[in-house]
Every structure is written in structure tokens, then in C-alpha cells.
Length: 198
Image 1 (cartoon, rainbow, N blue to C red):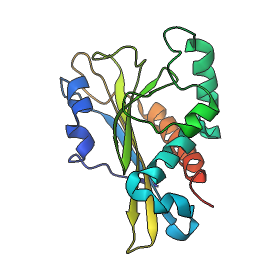
Image 2: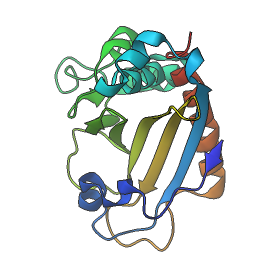
Image 3: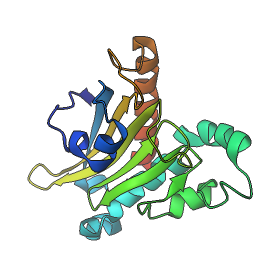
């Protein structure tokens, strides 16, 4: 389900957000949350949860899963080459096994900008080969929080999109585009969670 994203969320004070949204332009933002009983999570991931293995597996499932397959195929046909993008992750096996360390680039559209045991944040909205402030930009966070007292793992997909260049009067996404984005987010959530459950 989608829940409100607090204006005080740490993503809005992250170095990547402050650096790439210098004019503090308004954002299109959402937070999708899925709670899964701990009894359904693969035990070896829970055993190494403090090392971030559950978060990594969640991330691996998202990028290597069917939910991202069409976009990955499209981006591969358009941008994959043996020179400028050869170092990036493109294949399902690569996406399914990466540990997603900062600096990892995914299908010439995403780059990992931060990683903790509970969260992996990627910059999106353009090619990671373009490192400066962009006209269209964003951050996408894949996060996991274990709530032992409730017996659940809470999986989160957080999106924040904004115009990096110039001054914007409102959020960058029209309502119908943002609605489609939310449907896509739900699909990503299902394929990502599918990688961590028994």
C-alpha cells in the first residue's frame, strides 16, 4: 500500500538530493510499503540481516525480476555497448548477484548513491554517465525494516522525482504519469519481495 512520505524524511536531506536539486524544486514523491511475516522470509537472509543481506536480496529481486524485464530489455537495446556502458549491470545474472555497492550503475539509468544494511538508494532520471545536475532527476530507495515485536519485515520502495535545472512551480510528473508510476512500483514490489520469501 502507499503511505504518505514525511517532509522530514531523511531522503530530503541526503547529499544526493541536496546536490542535485539545488533550487529546492518541488518533487513528485511516493512511498509503497509491504509487510511480510518473518516466518515467510528465507531464514538465511534473516540470519544475516544485520549485514544487509535481506536488503541486498530485495534489491536483487527488483532489478533481476520480471517487473523490470521490459524496461531492462528496452534500455539494453538503446544504450548497452562495449565502451561507455560495458561496466554497468545489464544481464539478469548480474542483477541477481550484485551487492549494489555505491557507484554501481544499472542499465544506464540508475546509479547506487548510498547503501546501509537497511537501505539502498539509487539516482534515476537519466544516464549515470551524466554526473551533474540534470533537467529531470530523482532518487529511488529500496529499504527493509525488521519489526521483531510485530513479527514482520517491512519492505519499502520510496520515489522522489524533481527538476534539477531551473526553477519549477510544481512537481514534475502530471497526475496520469504519476498514477502509472505507482502501478509500476506495485509490480516492482511484488517481484522484489518474491526473491526473499520461501
